[in-house]
Length: 206
Image (cartoon, rainbow, N blue to C red; front, side, top):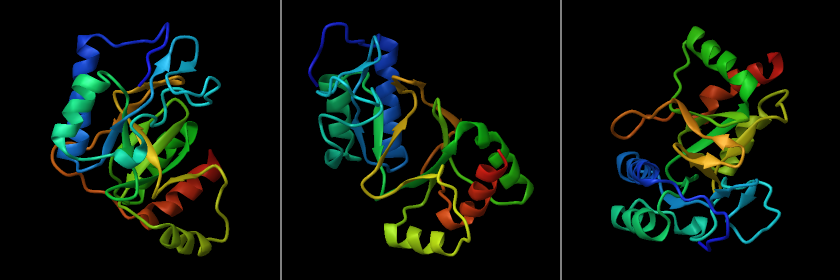
């Protein structure tokens, strides 16, 4: 990653937290990760795009295709190449996700608990709640959505070829946190089809 004037470099504690989170995601959870671009002071991004619309919220160098679960590479990236960089998980192979606007998130989780639908880890970004799911293909997702009479346009699908920014990363919009963390070991991830009804309802009522 190319350093710029005014670039924010986290302190020792921030670098340690980022490395720990990257190793936990890659080794503990089995999610391929790669360092992300950094959010700079003044709403800028460390990536080459001077007008980047999502500073600190995307992969850059190395590219997303390099995402790995190899602890040696993870340590090299977060100890030497990009200390303290955001942790970006590639979706498609080991996990996917669906997200909805943040105001609807708490209602959705209460609703799922009330109707007895289990859900897995949940991310909270400044603008969205992100529910992690088991991997799905785009044809599988398309078939599920086609069965619904209506699907809100506010839902976003993080599937093959996509990515998620994981805690304790800080993007240009603010910090990313766990609403419900993955816990120890390989986390259980629900099938996306079991969550769609709740996601659609929450998007409609909130």
